[in-house]
Image (tube, rainbow, N blue to C red; front, side):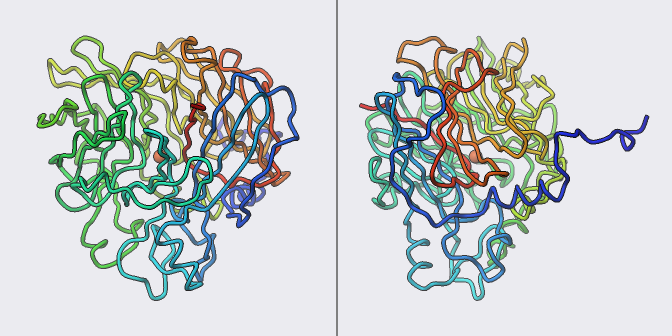
Length: 477
Ligand SMILES: [Fe+2]
């Protein structure tokens, strides 16, 4: 039987409806709020005492062609904070008021070329929108995007504090938006990448906030390197052959036109010790693929074990990330969880697929970053089918899905332990869900150990939270 003759699932709406929902999910809001969440189904666990921060693109001043013409990665940052205390919750959200935001707001015009929509005429330099991640470290809070230094905001009020170019220690133009913080030492490791030499940079910021490492790294080619992994001793840099053309960028072209899938260059993991002055070894991976996001990594004798969400069809991915904001998604937006084993004694790398369900936005218990973990969490169904959350098992023993309703889209899952010494599954998984049929958002609190059951609590929000990228939880001091 050909696949064409199989009827679509009766629970899924038609493609036009799904497209409209997807456009609505990314549609920006100009509402900045501050209120107690009172509409709660179930009971909010009293052990939750801290704040979940989330960041995402939310353009304030629309380009001439409208916000639908923007790329998924464009848009001013907007941070949403959900504070929990004694079984109650409060919501607050603010734009990230960086220099780009303030100038566009003052002039009332879209000023910089983004990844997608063009400005007419464009201002000089790159558009910098801190919209990708929001990272607490050493008592401060940083909005992050991969083409600028971190931007500090007040953890309580979300008011701007200004750019933080690593105490003047930057050896490149930017940091990525994906630092990894050692689960034991509290040291934050972050890389930078750029289209001109040195293509990669590596930084460490210790638990007190002091910059302890800032070094350039030579890489085989200029790759769009979104994320990195760490172990107790090593940094692991995934070099995937989505290659940047610096000439197009130098001429003021759009970033989306300057990246190409060139699988013949091969995929590598750059491995180096986290100490200053260490050498980097580029170890070939067994396939050419794209890793937007890696999960956790740890050392196992001479091996480094890394889990990641792997795009085996990056050409389709590039098409989809260009068009998702206008509601068009094919099959390219589908990564599947893989486990990579890097053998440092032989300079080889093996890969194994952990599950055949789509998985993106991988997370794990942050206390185990750099150390052996068993469970990971991810969003599934991004390619347009039924959305949900996935708990996967790195032993390959099986995954568990928390299915969402038709038209609901899950945000990145963030694990919060019940208390500091709780076991790996003893805690909660938080996810902000956009409900397209109702055009509203809710925050789910799932029991990590009973992942497929009804949420412990469902917080119905008074404000709409557009689909975003990444977030983190900061326990109350
Ligand atoms: Fe990311």
